[in-house]
Image (cartoon, rainbow over all chains, first blue to last red; front, side, top):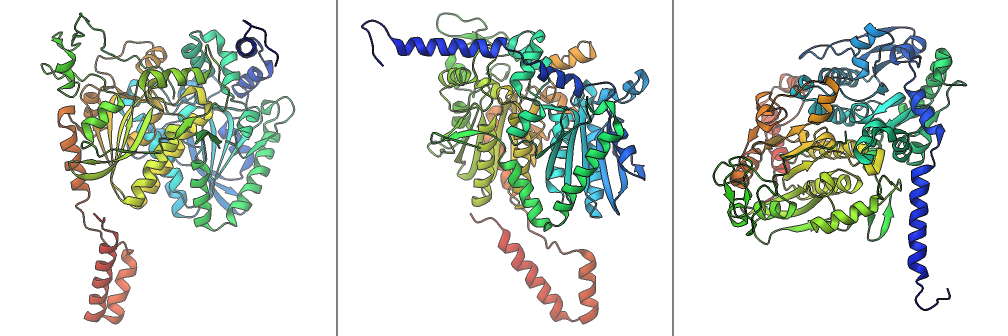
Length: 300
Length: 318
């Protein structure tokens, strides 16, 4: 590059490209991202019990953590499915004022996670595969939940899922909100419905902390990369499931059919594997999560 | 969950010219020497000041025994994250401010001549937040512990997952939990020390999965931060919310140890954890068959020898 005395092109170029990057990140809002956030939170979107109703002929809900209580924000039970039994566990939101309050807007307390652990251990005992459906804004932030060990309950659920010998599949069906969602998603296969989101923090909270302005939630959502396309690119989810045209809320039974077909395919593959290999691959899968540099190389 | 935690950082209390500051606990004026000579705790009221990773290693590791593992891992920027500033800028600043390469350091060390794998976190490095490097370093620490059978000591200080690495930070909770499970299957003793503050994703993963959980007095330990809870339930939190003492009352931690006694207590606890005798893990219903069928004293003697051989095979070599 030709240089003139006193003109430092290199510095100028760095400065301008930096500024361009700032403008690019700061101004260009992709409306499609926020649309997905809103679809994932759509009040008519099918919830766990809707999928259960459409997918399984017989379902027996099992309740309670045997320590403290039953948390209606997480439901679980045994389902008859294609000649085998399945343990289905999922977050549950409510649709009207009463059921929303009852389900605590899908925000579990420690007893919800402890119920999930109990049901998974039960499934493991009898060789029953586990399906989890994820749809929560996050674990409930409350004093009593903290006193009963919210963090520890989530951590124990993660270890419980790592330990299982049976095949495990999770599907993010709506909101995958932070640790409260991840607690049920340490599985052999992680699937995600097209218009679902999955994130380390809600875009509103992220904007409030990093941008000091919760009004920047749209920008935060985009920057966090929480859509199914983003997560597929980061290899966090194994398969993205298409939704009925316009979104899952338009046709619950069609959405359930899609989920059922995908589940069948995944289970068929997982069930043929040697349990030891299957379990080892689960550990390998989560070991690989993350991107870092080592000796200058970027590793995935 | 990632979050900002407002912490009583307790620096710049009442700075005067010779660098002395007033203790937030008892308002006594303390010189830097008063503090560093007393493990960064107030000699008058015992208030625990924040301690950085280096001071922590000095406190716990025998002099000259620390050797770092996985120190060459550095954060990448997979999302090209840009809020008010680019993520690499924030990393650079944190490196400059703390002189550390990340929010977690891992190494081999000796504590009162006992070999351990020591992991320390530093809240000064982007709030001790957990991103890919923290997760991977934790994994390497457990690998090293499994290989050497040296017990694992993890000193936590963290605001939670690192937002700038998005979902990958969240997944470090899954990753570190898998690591703890592998360690437990050996098993190698794992003790965590929760210091002020330990919150969010770290609490909901390895910090609370330890065999024994120690906390420092007055440390804030919770999953959801006080501000998040206040906003949700719209009422003021009790004074002692989330403090170590309150966690103790509710059965969430094992023991509160003042920092000045921490090293000795750690060594004592690790020693006790390693003092067990391995027991044969044969299912009961299987055992019942063999003596009745053959019934002989020889079979029983053989079984006893087998059990003994099993137990000596797994005892730690040190």
